[in-house]
Amino acid sequence: MADLRRELRIENSTASNLVFRMEKSGLLQKEPSPHDKRASFLKATPHATALMRRADQLMAVEASDMTHRLTDGEQLSLITLLERVLKNLSPED
Image (cartoon, rainbow, N blue to C red):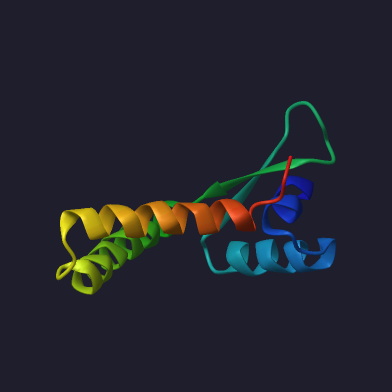
């Protein structure tokens, strides 16, 4: 849970609530850690995997719709700029 909390930058209670709701909805399964009885591994269910695959397909269609009038060079520039923006959002190591 600590890794999830750090990755999403959320409080412990928020992470616990999120995992509980996703588990209840059939999107996550908890598996106990063989090395640490206090820890659990979170695993996406087949249903969650199918939803993620569908979301990826929909996002690809939307991205194509938004950028189809851009030249290849413009698309490359957009990708480069967006990567820089994402890097700026990431915590510095």
